Image (tube, rainbow, N blue to C red; front, top):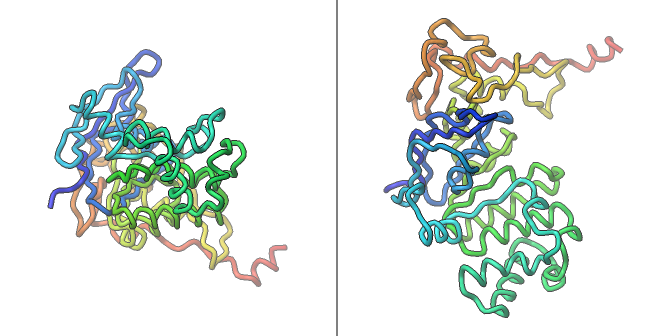
Amino acid sequence: MNALLEVEDLTVRLPVAGEPRTVLRDVSFSLDAGKTLGLVGESGSGKSMTVRALARLLPDGAEVRGGVRFDGSEVFDLRSEALRSYRANDVAMIFQDARAHTNPVRTIGDFLTEALRLNAGMPKAAARGRARELLAQVGISDPERRLGQYPHELSGGLLQRVMIAAAVAARPRLILADEPTTALDVTTQAEVMAVLRRMQREYGMAMLFITHDLELAGAVCDETIVLYAGQVMERQASRRLHEDPLHPYTAALLRARPEIDRRVERLPAIGGHPTTAYEAPDGCAFAPRCPFAEDRCREGVPPLLRIGEGDTGCVRMPGLRGRMVPRPSVVSASNEEAQR
């Protein structure tokens, strides 16, 4: 069976200070219908740029190389009506900041019914009825009253639920979720993710899920891709990635997680600073920050290698496998008392 979404050697260059700079470099992956794929990495790693490329929302002056195929059709070849249909019916995007992507002077009802009326051709009354149903499905009580409210009258969690309702209104086949819970507290985050996952299962949608939270990606995603400096460092099934990382960058991210069942003196940090794709040195982009780097790591951009059921961009695999995630040193209660 062919994948619903296929991305092959996607490279994006944007004008920066008048010069074209690479922000994504040879990104490749696929996503099957109904599955969830996570994109994780530090700020500037290319996560949001990847989904904007898939949605054809790149800024003016962008140069694109490589291919993006949705259900067998090349996305960057779509024009006029075909592109509108792709954006309106096949793919929907949930943005990180719901307030920045809703019109503050229009009601929630206007926001939800506009696409239904313009794209689906629904009469106004039918579109309003459908909007009420959608709000109820995402767990918003008294939907008729909410339709008459403005975005500033809703909490962040409620407004993000409205964004989910708008995204699934046309029953798209693919959801692009760009850190949809980052601005929410932990309890609201869990509620919103439960709604999103339920709607995904109900409509059978695939989802590309961007997050900084490795734990959340592990819980939500079937597979996880780790990006660094606009390149794929690793791709694995989410459970295996947490148990057996195949790249030193992934291992460093895992080591930096706080754990609720143990106390540590200090969380291990990744040395140096994050690198963008156009600042990346020759060879492996992570090599300047990697404690395992050798001379060969700096000789050309490493290709993705197949290790077991995962892919890695580290030339030192499989020799490093299983050696990269030592447990942080535990501070016992007695030692903590002695230090006071």
